Image (cartoon, rainbow, N blue to C red):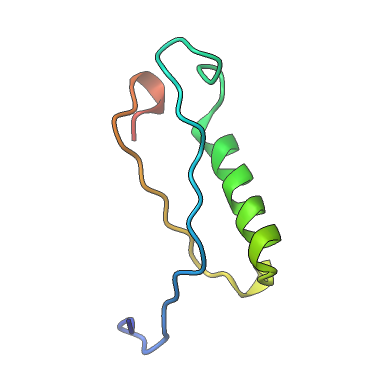
Length: 69
């Protein structure tokens, strides 16, 4: 895949956050905090230098309330 600027894009790894339920143990966790754990896990698992990462894309499905996005 090549972007408009001619730079290549790579999928390095995929990690998911825990699955919760409404009012469950993850109710007070902000999505950004869960995302930070995901990024840390990818860096640790792959050994990629975080300085070379330009963009990170997250997906979000069926969230509710203030965490909807």
